[in-house]
Image 1 (cartoon, rainbow, N blue to C red):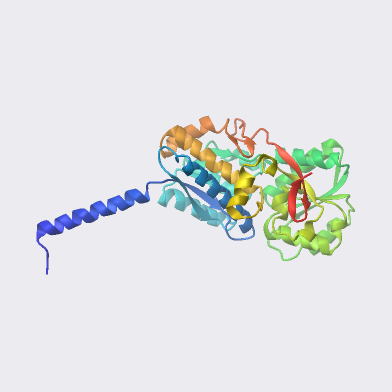
Image 2 (cartoon, helix red, strand yellow; image 1 turned 60 degrees about the horizontal axis):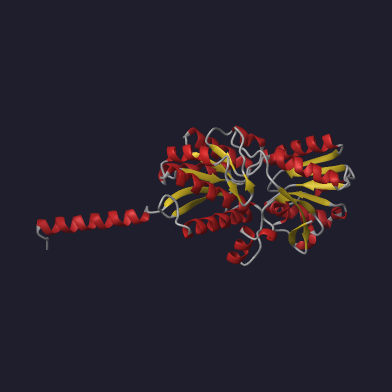
Length: 370
């Protein structure tokens, strides 16, 4: 049985109004995008980054949101792959229409997604890539983390101050590892030290026993390494099994390098970490523990936290989610932004000019100040 025309039109109008209302509710949040390695070798780091973002979103919305609305982050998985990450950034910007994207973790993934966003005149916030190649991404890319020249200089000085002069350097063979190896060697040599051996390993191998045995023949007085994901687990386990742990180990971003390794494999390791994460000042570290019932797995959640807070500051300054307005606002608020990792103090390339670090060590399975 058919309804009268006027009743059909009324019902149709109500349905349209109901749909529009539902759509309006669905779009009530101001949503930004994020690309993280939620699967793959760096999945635990990606989870930590997402936790940092969730903490930031909760705090922002508890204090009124942004531009009069709630804020949300739509997260896509990169699986640690540049190709998958590029598909993800296209989805976020072309389908979901986000005005800003945060991410990724590794420099080799961060650089291409940043270049895509710059090409499309959208804001990119780098939260973990530290290769000096990040500096050339382009005018709409901003970093909340210092690049290799800052962390390598600090690490080289710290290693030298501890009395080590002949070190072996271990890092992944990619944009990050290559840059860090070059920068560390430059600063350590200038201080008076010597890099007696270097291992840039290929990610994804089940064993690095042969490479470790080879580099051990240089008889360094310290192994300096920077690693993450399952590669770090394998390196720590096999160096322990080979007895290489009898020589001291130093980790650049120690939480990243030891996150998934059993305590016995990383016992006594020293290293450096980004400042602002210790329990002495409460804040982020305490909130993380309260929310998740455990300490941070890495330092990278704090960078992600700061990135979300920076995005919120830009949106509030812009007064809307318009991409062009947000980008203009970012250029104003980012250089003087202060987060849990310190003051950004960005230079003309939108990179940190300084960043405080902490000297840390592995103790009973935890990373503590030394």
